[in-house]
Image 1 (tube, rainbow, N blue to C red):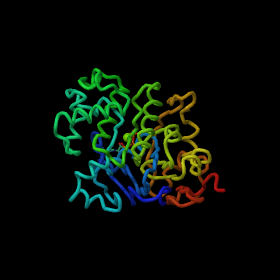
Image 2: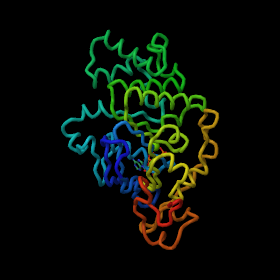
Image 3: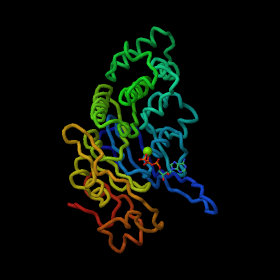
Image 4: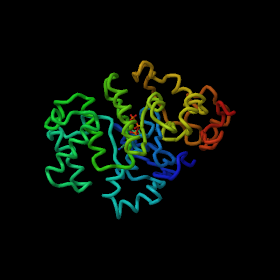
Length: 328
Ligand SMILES: Nc1ncnc2c1ncn2[C@@H]1O[C@H](COP(=O)(O)OP(=O)(O)OP(=O)(O)O)[C@@H](O)[C@H]1O
Ligand SMILES: [Mg+2]
């Protein structure tokens, strides 16, 4: 399951995360397998999309990479070094190199701090910049880089900015320590349709200019299509398909990918819309069967008797399915 673009930046091996979910009145606590045996790799300068509907475990994977959630099992390697070891010895450097942009531009900014202070914080803490002049110069440069006018923006508080501007501030803040790996967790979901394409194309320009490696988390394939080299699809904590974005989107191997594609919003006319993106009730299935079997119109006998492993089906393409589509 090697990366397509050379040296490995991030390698995730058999990652699992189980949460205890408290039951309601007189109900037992249940175990939620938020992430279930997930493995993938990100190559230098690669953009990999992690796609899946709400609750499929995408953010939990991101939190594990950021060291905010401890895996129940499995390993994460950053440039060949185990994250556990990095956390013990070199977390500051890792925080500098690996940055995240969150979904909610309102929640992720401190409402009481002006733009200058928000962006100065990582510059002070992680990049070691301390003089006010230098900070001013760096913050102004970052604001320009994300398409904002420093003179107009630098003294504003978050509530004085639009959603799109706020997300640009988040991106500037993430870029402040000159990261190498950027994790974008649904960076456009909370924005107006008119802002979505602008922010996505800006992210892609930044990726090119700064030679970033990007993990693009999204619940829609339209964003994956316009941004990523490869796409990984998750369903109920499992990675069920992984391959070059163009092939996954034009000829999905896993029936779930086909289903997501059939309800994928369009990127027509330069606007990413949410049309047809319905939320479905998803239920856990018994451990032994494929967890997509209850929704799968192609399910055969074996799908109810065993859980399919992620295997190579065609060159560079992997799927976890006993009755795959488009095998040739
Ligand atoms: N701290 C937690 N405690 C208990 N359960 C959790 C916790 N965090 C996540 N979960 C559960 O783990 C599963 C995966 O959640 P996660 O947030 O990773 O999904 P997601 O794919 O990012 O969804 P979304 O698209 O809505 O952001 C969900 O069932 C969620 O309820
Ligand atoms: Mg999420």
